[in-house]
Image (cartoon, rainbow, N blue to C red; front, side, top):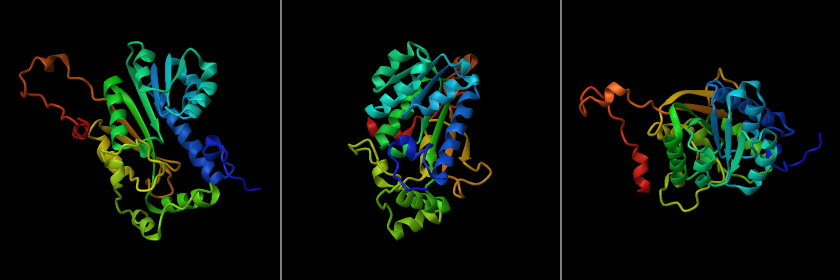
Length: 281
């Protein structure tokens, strides 16, 4: 097989010539589609939709007949153009937007049943992650799905990824030996730049220093995590031969009508305000 560097997003992921890279991405796309369709949603938003692959799969699936509006949001013009082309056959059910200011008009007063954010949050600064959590909190229906997919960058999995990125994808070297050993042995890593509220650039290019366990702690301040799913080998823990982990979170249900009439602080637990939001005030 003749070696050739990936030329586009598709060849870097689910159409990569190397099975070691291709299969995990194919598996995560299939897993994402299954999880999104499980609740038979009517309105779906893909936050950081890339080329629109996941929404296209969902809309192509017979189980996606319940979806009357699928919105792909991506600020990158090149990705947005690819998504528009891929989702064109599904118009007018599918819409592509490049600015969150367009979301309200695209929804036309409707609430969102499911939000997907796949392989995105590891690239966002604290402020941009908070923006995503706010979009979920403001637009999801009670019990609505928030489906997050992030890479596993710890354990033996990390060694496989470093090899794939350096040798098969031709990317520059990311880690020095000491930096590589800590996450490989399961030690927590907290990249200060990813948690800096003053960071001006909202995009973090690489995965170095990302730890999904830190993200789980952060997400719980906004939405309860219902379960986690590792891929591509679901039966194994995330750090052992799994490249991705799905976080299945839900919008908390509003208090029942009878609870609203109770005296404040009596027989009712008030939801704590997310601490993270204070950094942007």
